[in-house]
Length: 512
Image 1 (tube, rainbow, N blue to C red):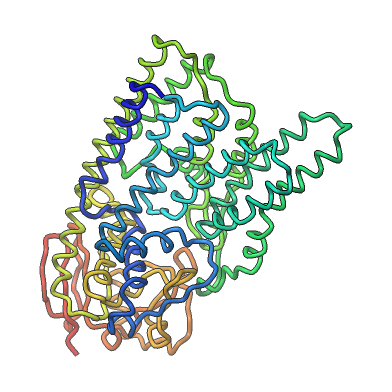
Image 2: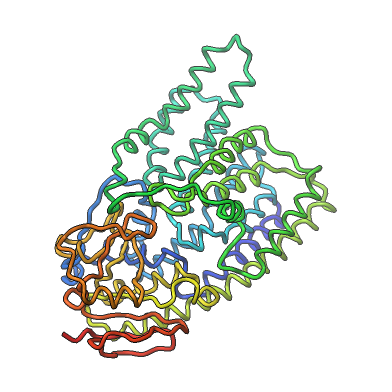
C-alpha cells in the first residue's frame, strides 16, 4: 500500500475514533448496564456487598463477546478504561471486517472500505448493542476467509470453520445468523454457476458449507430463551415508520443534526457513481438473503426489541466491501475528499453529543457518591422519554444509575440478569427484573401502598419479559434516585429525605 493510502487510512481512523477518545465514559444506551455486569464479574470475589445481591452464572449463552474481553482487560486496567477500549473495538471491528472482505475479493486494499467509517457511528452503537457490533466484524472476517479458501478440500475447510462459527455464535447469535445468510447467498450463487453434470460435487459443497454451522445449531437448539424473561413474551413486526427507521439505522447516531445531511449526501454520491461502481460477484449474491431477511425481520422478537435494526448495517458493509471504482486519481481523490468532509462533520456532532452525555454521567456519579456501599437503590424517572429527548437519549439516561453498581457496589433492580452471566440472589429476585426500566412517579406512589407480590412473577406490560419489582418499596429499598431532567416530579412520598441534590436529579434516603 502506498504512503498516501496509509496516510488516508490513518486520517480516517483518527477522525472516526476521536469522539470516543475525548470522553471519559461513553454514553451509549445499554453500555453502562453491561459495564456494571462486567464490574460484578471482576469484583464479586472481593466484595461482600456484591455477593449479597448477585451471583455469577456462566452458561453457554450466545451473548458473550463483552464478557470474554472486558473482564480480562479489567484485571490490569480500571473498569471504565477497559470498557472504553471495548467500545473502541466495537467501532473498529466492522470497518476492519469490511476491509478484510474487500481484500479477499479484490486482492488489494483500496480506499473504498474507508466509506465504512461513515456508518461506524450508527443506531446500534447509540443503543449500546456492543456484543453484536464486535461480533459483526468477526462475521465479516470469517466470510472473507471462507471466500479465500474456496478451493480448499471441502471437509477440511468445514472442519476448520465449524469451531470458528461456534465462537462467533457465542459472541452474538444474530451476528452468526448474519454470517450464515451471507454464506447461503454465496454458495447458492456458486451452485448456480456450476454445470448440471457437477450435481454431486455441488451438493457436497453445499453440505460442507452447511456443516460448519452444525455445532452452533446444536447449542442454539438447547437455548431456552424464556429463561431470561418473566411472563408472556411478545413478537411484533412493527409499522412502516419502524421499518424506515431500521433502513436508516446504519447512518443515524444520537440525533446528530448532520445525520440527515450525511445520508442525503451519500445517496447523491452513490447515484452519481452508480455507473462506475462494480460489485464483486463473490459478495453481491450474499446481499440478497441478507436484504430479504432484513425486510422480514420483526421489530420485536420474543420481547427482544430492535431486531430489525441489525441486518441493514451488515448489508451496507457487504456492499462497501464488494464495491470497486476506476483507479483514476482524478476520480478517486475528489470522492475521498467528500467522504472525509462528511466523516469530519459527523464525528464533530458525535463528539458534541457524547461530551454532553459524559457530563450527565459525571453528574450522576457525583450525586451517587453519597450512596453508602451496598445500598439498595430504586430509580425513578420523571416524564419518560419525551422530556429528555432533546437533552439525553432515553436509553442512555435510563442506564446511567447503573454506575452505582460500579462505583458503590450497590443493588439496582434492573441490572441485566436474564440471559447473562450475572443473576440475582434468590432473596433479591422478587425486587428485581431481568428486563425492565426505572419506574415513574405514579408507580412510586402506587407501589408504596401495594403489598409485595409474595414471589409471584408478573409481566410489566411494557415490552414484555419484565417483573413488577417496586411494590412495597419502603421495606425493600434503602434509597431513591429521582431523575428529573427539567420535569416536575410532583408530590413525592413523605418518607423520602433529601440526601443530595443536582440540577437534573435528586437522591433521597428512605425513612422507615
